[in-house]
Amino acid sequence: MKPFNPFFTVVYYVARVLVSVLFPTTVEGLDRLPRNGVLLCPNHSSNWDPILVALRLPVNYRLHIMAKVDLFKNPVLAWILRRLGAFPVSRGSSDIQSVKTAMQAIKSGDNLLIFPEGTTIHNGIGYVDGLPAHAKAGVAVIGVRTGAILVPVFVDGPKRLFHRTRIIFGEPYTPVYTGRHGTSEEMQKIADDILTAAYALGGQAVGGKPLCNE
Image (cartoon, rainbow, N blue to C red):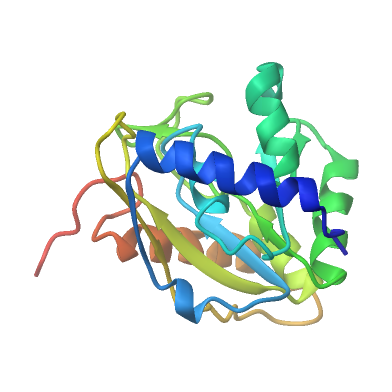
């Protein structure tokens, strides 16, 4: 379990004040968020997303963040992320240690934040792979194998300095699968469903386009 760190409390409140000035944020649904064993699944439109979400959670909310290794190349951002409970994961490779760290965090009773898309999305396209926004099955695999409570989260974008944004925490999502760990097709469907639910909280389809009202 993530240990309590008094220094983190100071960093948390200082960072929260600064970030609140840069990105004023409206938060919805925080009151219905479970306290332990949660897998938070936000959409991903900006490198600021993990920091914005983490700083809107209670200071004693034991959170770990699975973040792309590129974010840790900036020493200032890396320093903040590590103190918010983030650890790096290498995209496009079999980063077994990061997956083990993620699963252990949940099994120990802590909470984990992971972006189902695996990359930031701009105009419906992945920044790294150039593909249309879609969920990676890994988020479902981690959720199912740890018995985590899957919670969709909507983070509005793009982020502009001094412009208000919003974060919406949804209702827990119950995955449906067969057997002990499900099939690969079932894992992909669960990942797709949780990402669709995250965008829908903000009235958007996957990728950020407004949902059509039929």
